[in-house]
Picture 1: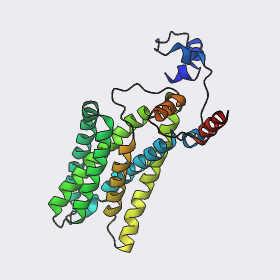
Picture 2: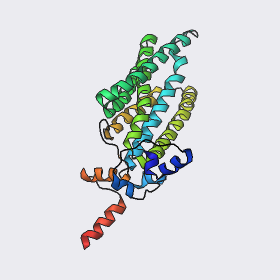
Picture 3: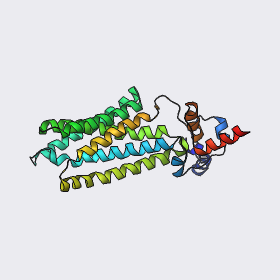
Length: 258
């Protein structure tokens, strides 16, 4: 699909000398010369700007909180040998979150599960903050690890469906970059918390809750036709009564003067 919309499908066919599977695409879209968009296009168009900003923060939070739970593992018990059992429990929780996430997004939709997994993970962190019982702390951390793993897995699917085909790979790459930054900051926060004597879980909770409410703004993609061009995404925003980019606004103002 991406090769068709970037005029590279014919080149691939000639190089490999193999026939490609026919992709059902509108003929009027194939006749148009396709543009190549850079990273700047994600922030240039107002229809894409909120999507990429929310996606970047969601990916950042997924990695930030995920690795935060992992580095918080040694502090769950005073027994040095308990770290192995706790690690196995959190591993099962992660596997449960990833497996159940694939079923839930197909049954209940992307947005509800994606947003809800962040919120539940954030709430579990709040319970961890007020807990003094090691067993209860392990339970709420396992719940949080389960749902943040679910969110991390859904992010790959949801991000690819939200953005148009011509810039889908770029958007996923930029979002993934944000996740790597979150993974770098998580252990640094743990060390800083140890030096300054504060609980880092409060930051994992806040970022998860904020990500949960922000992802509510994303469109639902379950059962919807995916956009291939940025213009399709902009037309959706226009039909919803949302103002587009400054270039579109200036063009409309010039037309209104005539």
